[in-house]
Length: 292
Image 1 (cartoon, rainbow, N blue to C red):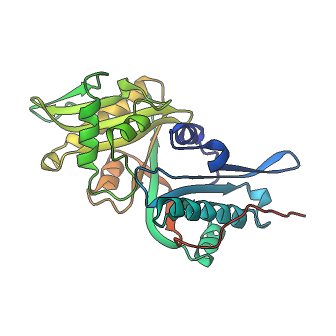
Image 2 (tube, helix red, strand yellow):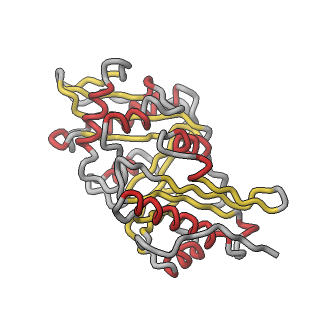
Image 3 (cartoon, rainbow, N blue to C red):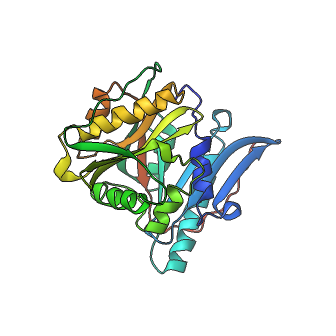
């Protein structure tokens, strides 16, 4: 995409999940002692259905069959997991929309495009200000020991109709939220009407700046400016913490109009990602790479 991607913390969060076995679920390809490619394929037994794989080949090593070998390795893992689980596990992966060769590889192996997403963001000056919440609504900072179940309940309800993978149990939610290495309770805000929680926003600080991980508002309260005020609050909080860039990822098929909201705040699309699902069964894959 023409620039270095700040993905270190996102990979570390995946690797820290309790169901990830690093020696089994990751592969590093080297050429003469230098990294040439990387892949991981992880599966949450509590969710089943899909194995989520990610692979990247450094441009100078493309065209040598490394991507094909990594894809075959991911597919083999999905087959073995499906047999242990007594149900087919579908391999799922994502690529940058500009990567035509990766798209051709996936289509050639029977993968189908199932979704598209966008990474959006904007630069921060440092003096961004929050706006008041709508009348009758207050914003509370997340309080450890009080708001864990509230956050889980809000997330489960507001993302019930969203496409993709989301934690379905309190335990899984905790692993991806307050047990994650990037967790910061001061960057989580809960919106309430009297004592009733109606929405939330959560952010983290990573090497690339501030990343907004989740924004949700309960359906009866949508269209009243709650989401806009929550976004303004978290952007101001990130700016005050020294972040000079804020970004997020969104599903382009989101029916709530989230991408329009982010655009209205000044964010622009930085890249698109394409999500592909592969066939549930294929011959066991091996990671065998031969290069000149």
